[in-house]
Image 1 (cartoon, rainbow, N blue to C red):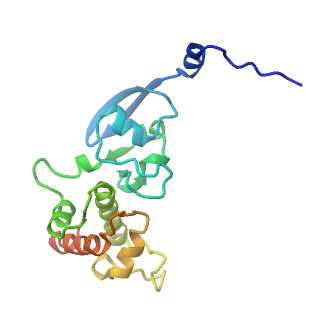
Image 2: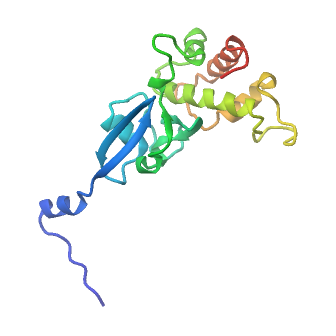
Image 3: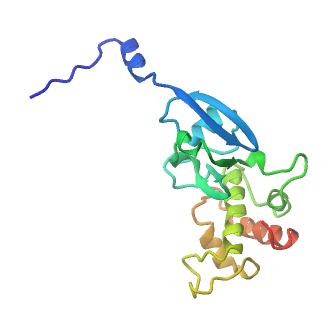
Length: 194
């Protein structure tokens, strides 16, 4: 029977866990190099090390969607993903969605349709909505698609389809009807593009 020894001094515990390494990320069009623990989530790297606090830490278990970002154009839960796993990926956060002072159509639509109340979930909702419209444009079916072999195009998305496709994003304030309105409005304004 082996015996495991536990360091008795707090500084010994700290030294044992100090295994930082250099991680290179491409975020919002910029190359960034961080010296971080390899166990750092993408969310913590963005928020704590790059000061990109738009993506929120809601549940930290991948259940609320507040941390949604795009990785290589696909919506991703940043709290469930390690930063080190994304060194060659294109990462876009809510801060990188606008083009300079020109808001993305989805950002404008959320303001126009009052698609938020407290605003905590809004960055994740917007990032998810943009990704969702892109998925629909690429004819990716959802769980409520009647014919999986013939998924609706983005122009044909019903409120039920949008609701299902956005189900991974929770709004504690219950602004769901306005969020769906905003997504439909953004789709019309953008002419079918996300």
